Image 1 (tube, rainbow over the protein chains, first blue to last red):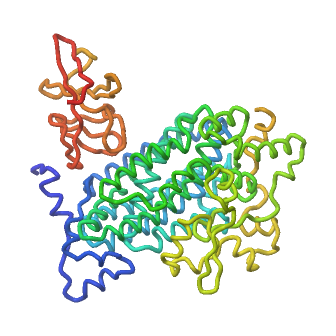
Image 2: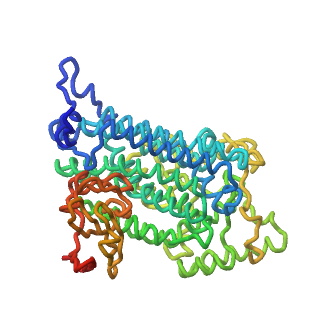
Length: 495
Length: 99
């Protein structure tokens, strides 16, 4: 058989478009699911993915990756590698599995929606591989923590978290429903593959894989690298989709979708990666601070990319850049205080050496956040652990679902008023942590108005009894599952 | 930088020239090339890739480049930055100045 080079047959085999005779174009691609009607059918044919792969090559590559990664896991699971990991790092991977495994599986729905309702055959082809990728990521990230169960029973939160009303699960579920489960193909390409994957997770996975190897967690490092190689490929769907929108005069719509999801991605990232990088990862393995990481990878590289397309920085760019100095520190404090409500052991990460690092990376940290930790440290040293737990729920934002921490923003000089932002829609009061979260709601209130934050549920009597015990039960946390300080307060005693 | 004895035909090698990380390649047939050491896609070290004929496949995500020209093969909308290379006797030297 003659060997043809890919370029000789690829386009022909990929572009399986046909003319509908029995149904209308609208019936095949309903706007609610496709989101493509701003641009004409012919114009969508310009959609071209930069990196090409055939099904045969895809399967070959995936089998190789799976074989390598699963073999490594089998070899390591018989060793003592996990037992010897730093307690903060164990929290990094437990938090990751609980928050990420099911969303990866759900992302296969998003990819499948593009594979069915994307308007170009090339796009549907690329998305088909994406759907297969995400099924794989759901499965592999359920299987790896399953192997940890004997040593860490909360590995089962990889599967469990999304089936509970844990506050972090509520936040992550609401975000991903917005981003891909309940979204149209064009919006998914811009919001999931371009904004979240190209902008944030693809980079995060590169960084996390390097950190994992550095702390000696070869199993997690291999897993994350293996996932990242798929993500780098299917994330490229955003680029040609934006190009088609812009070339056909719909830059404003593309900009809106990106502005909407960039902020939401930042919020989720600050919670999951901010805490991991600046507080949970052992000091000796930290290569850069979370702020430096975002500045280098997101601001420099990703922002340059969307500037290349003629898109603008989101309108809230200055607020985003200012938040890099304080927002995740505030969220960390809340998560640590509310540690029984998470399925991992939050590492306070404020030993004298770590505080020195924080002050160096975030000048002024001691003055703003350090003084709270001074009080907490004093309580721990005097044996008054009870005083380190909160008594009431913090207010939650009706978009990002995270605690409203504007008071910390006031301390950091970013806000002047600690009060949440308010908005009344159809007689119901909604609270927001920031102008961008409020903007996201008010642009399309029908999309968000029916959702209840954890605090709304508490106030409307869904959580009973309405006390800390009731809240923990509502969140699906039995006592042994509740988070504790990762190091047994070693940091408070100089360690 | 390196000697021909250290870079056989078909070999790739990463070297540092001033502030630049550079990949040296000894192509089948004997020609030598020097390009940027990191993949333009996600900074993966290109010298860990696989050279088949003139085509280098990056070990990170399978991007392919024709090392005779530096042109991207898959995707074809990118190109590697070349660096001037000189061979005197057995000694290979590379200029860290982008032409």
